[in-house]
Length: 323
Image 1 (tube, rainbow, N blue to C red):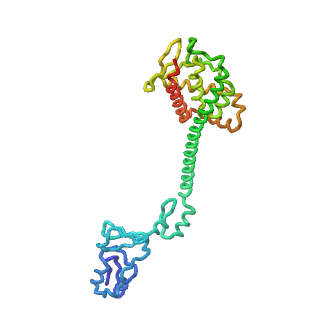
Image 2 (image 1 turned 45 degrees about the vertical axis):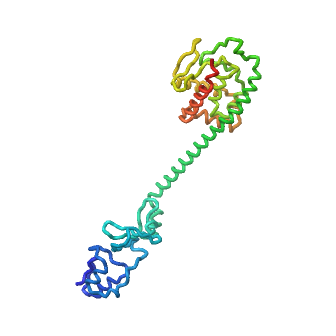
Image 3 (image 1 turned 135 degrees about the horizontal axis):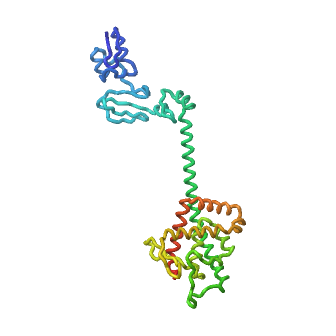
């Protein structure tokens, strides 16, 4: 009985074993890693009758080569030879990519089997949902970035418009201006400021850019050079967690964070109370103000952070105006 020491094939006829060695696809080393050349010598077969071991395009997508002198990694086009722990080399081509399900990773021997499977694959719906959620997240990030850009544009636009408007308003109320050098100023207590000089025209301009309206209004309320009676709050040292407010004919130290929060809430309340002006805004401006109103009422963290930060900067930048 003649037996192949590599794969276990056996035959009573020596010629059958010779034909076994001549096959184009070398048998798999099931029993031993012994090379084909050694087996040929053992069975006294003429090596010239045995075809050179070919390098087939596919062998279950893998070819085993027992050549201890081959380099650790050889690239042949789309084929790679990778040395394994046993001293053999595994050759894998791109068919592995074609025979793996795109949704669940299941492997198939044929592309048609993969195609049929993918039509009903359970992972398909999960993959579709994942892609949908990914798109929604990306769209949300885009909207957030647009909102930030809009906030920056509003601040720049508001700065230019308010400077022009306040100059005109100051000229219209010259008769009511208090001359600080000639008269003693009676400061209003913090929280009881005079707002009579704010007219409809002012609020109409203010509501064009609602997301930056509160800090702008607070600046014009507490640091208007024509109304020093409202100069009743200041931050003398930005590094300390305190602010000074005028109460009971004297300056009192208060928690800076709480003072700023009170200012923001009051500023929003006064602006939001201009119902007639808001109702007469064009639809686009009404929608923008509605978005601002809803975010403020729902305690939107991003909006609250921006408003408190801008208000603190107003206090720091105008500390020299207060008495």
